[in-house]
Every structure is written in C-alpha cells, then in structure tokens.
Image (cartoon, rainbow, N blue to C red; front, side, top):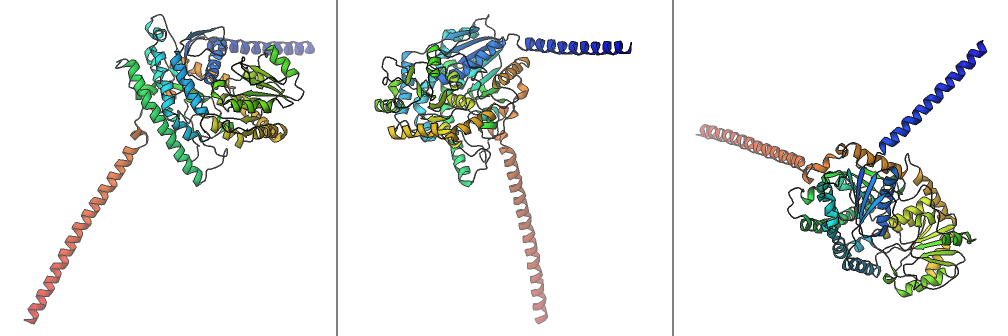
Length: 554
C-alpha cells in the first residue's frame, strides 16, 4: 500500500509538473501571439543607397514575419520583398538618378583616403542629390498615406540618411516615429540627448584602440574631428531646413524644422558598441542592432553559385564593390588590373558585375553575377576571402561570419571602416584609385595565406554574436514596446526638449559668473570705501599730530 501511495504521489507530481510546463508553454505562446498582434507599420525608406535599403528591408521583413502589417515606401526596387509586405515604389526621375550617379562617379575619381576631406568635398553634390528625396514627399502616392481617411498606422519607421525633413510624415499621421540608421550613434546621438564625450569617444571617421584611453594628440584630433563632423551636419541640416520649407511651407499642423526630432521615440543603429567600439554612454532611446540583416539560417544559394562553390577545392573569393559602384564609375585600366590578378588565382572567384554583356574578361575560375546574396555567400564555408568596398553592411556580415577581408574603399564611411578593419587585424586596406597588379596580388596572398587574419576575425565573430538577445529579437522587442506604450515618451532624455544653453548649463554658469563678478565688485567697493576711510582717518590723525607739534613749537 505504501509502495502504491508512493507511486501515486510520484505520478501525481509528474502530472502536476507536466501541467505546469504546459501552462507556462501556453502562456508563452499567448504572450507571443499577443505581442505579435498585427500592428500597422509604415516604413519610409527613400535612401538612394541599395546597401542601406538591404538593412531597412531586413527590418521590414522581420516585422512582417512577426505578424505585423507592414507597408514600405522606397525609391529603389528592393533587393528582396517579403510576401506579406505592401510595397509602394516612388521611382526617381532619370535626372535625379543621373545626379546621384554623377556624384558617385566623381568620388571614385578622387583620392578619398582622408574621410573628412572627402566629406567636405562632397557637401554640395551630396546635399543636392539627397534633397531629391524631398520630391518623394510631394508625390501624391505618399500624400495619400495621410490625406486618405482610411489609412491608419501605429508606427512610422524612417530610414535616415540626411533626410530629417521626412520626419514630418509622423506628425501628419499623428503616430510615433522610430528611426533606422546604418551608422554608429555618433552621427545622430545629439538628437537623442547622448552626451558629447570627445575625450574618450572617437568621432565617426577616427579610430582608436578599443578600450584604450586617448593620449593628448588623439584627443586633440578627436576634438577637431567632432567639430568637423558637426560643421558638416550643420551644412546638411541648413539645406534640409530649406527643403522642409519648400515642401510644407507654413503648414500650421507641423512644428518648426528644429523641433521635428522631438517626436522620435527610438533610433536603431546598425552597430554593436561592446564588440566594435567605441565604448560610449547611450541614452535609453539608443538601441544598437548591428548585424540585423544577417539571417539566423542562410537561404539556399542559387544553383549556379552553389555548384560553383562545391567545385572549389582551394576555396573561393567573393568580390563585391557594393551596389552604388557600377562599371561606368571604374577606370578601365583598374578593372583590367583586377581581372589580370584574380583570373590567375587558383581560388574560385564570384565577382559582382552589373553589366554581364561587357565583362572584364573570361576565365574558368570566375563567375560573374549582377546580383549576389551576399550574406548567404559569406556564410558558405568555402568562401575564404571577401574583397569589399568596406561598406558598413558588408563589413558587418563578414565579421559575423568570420571572413577576412581586403578592402578597396571609395567614399563616405568606407575609408574609416577599412581603417578600423585593418587595425583590428581582420584584413588589409588598399586604394582603388591607385591600384596596381603587384600590390593587389600580394594583398590577396597575404590575407589568404597568413592565418592571423582569419583567426582574428573568427575570434571577433564569437564576441559579436554573444548577446542576451539577437539583433532581430532586440529590434522586435523595442518596436513593440514603443507601440504598446504609445510612443514611449518616457524613454526620451529631457535634453531633447531643452535649448542648447539650458542643456549645457550655460545660463547657470553665467549666473555664477555674474554672482562672482558682483561679489568681487562689492568686495572691491567695500575695500575701496574702507581704504578711503582708513586713509582719511590716518590723514586726520597725521594732521592732528602735526597740529600738536606745531602748537608745542609755538
């Protein structure tokens, strides 16, 4: 009977335990379903850079797979489109695309190894090209989003690339705004109230040993770099303010251009400060989701690429200079030099090339493709080297998958990305403008044959992946958090709503200075009066003494 009771107790305990597990599982499933209740989310992704669009469309895909109703507006055809995403294409006119292409073409023919010189050199051309994004906001398709009464959204996600005037759409729709940015927080940190720490947080285009304090020289250069970056953004914002006025005029429903950022709930940055650096203080509204475009499991490769890589006993090289750079932007002799080198390698080479009718040359070890599933290719074990323009997205994917790199940066943040990559020991950097066959061949051999580069980037990959939540999980949580809390205004730093003078306590310091000056003046006045009184008393005493002496003598 005792044995029976024990068995009965054990059985009932196990049943209770299983019931508890099932209950927890049911609650977890219900929480997921509740969290994923389809919110209506609008994505405004009007950057002219296909690499930016990859990151932004990855965010849209993640939200669609979560069960949200996602609508995206783009000016370029997306590289991929989820079946549950509603896509609105507002194509740019040919003149606008030609203007952007001329900017890219000009930058490829200029020495842009100095990121700051390149940045200021391209202010006029870039601002003119990016202001074309203002025409998107005038398009009737976009206007219908807020003019049509049946269109209702819960959240706006704006892909940021010097287009702050587009934040006005959130005010028109009366919904919270989330911003997605492909750069680290240094570019937009001020907008959110991030402290400006120039003594130990390196500027966007400067490098410093991760975790090491800056010496005097680096701190001096970092201050100049930060000031230069602020001047650059001032010039861009000045033009954006003018574009904002041209689009919306004196619309009484909209705030001034300077107040647009006060409705931003969160900014998602495609960075991971813990592993990439620099270590910096971030306000709660700064969320880092570096690597968000990297899939948990790579998709199957196109058949021709999969078979090509299977027949690569010595490994394979992925060669891609990004989506902005086209055949017409490159010097013919540079292309010929690149072909001469890679065609002579024993490794297979997959080369991204936009004009398949006019290839650089024919070789059994080269597969040309107009489009590449870059993340899926870098995940393949047979890829042993990535020759890249050092765009942020490509460098991130290579670091995630532990692939060494040879960087040929062109413009923008690419030179600084390449500098950081080389400094971390993940590969080498060379100049595309002055590329020579000998140095290019030696660079490829060095990175392929010296195991230190692969070891360093694989070690970094382990650190980069080690997070409490993956980038997609982090992104989903915070997007839904903003929706649940109707904009989550409590996350905003008070600095966002303060003037520059108040935020930096200049008025308090001024009061202290006035008080100190007034105190000094009063003390000086008191001492002066006291001195005069003492002097007068001394004079009277001396006169009295003199009078007495004269009286005695008489």
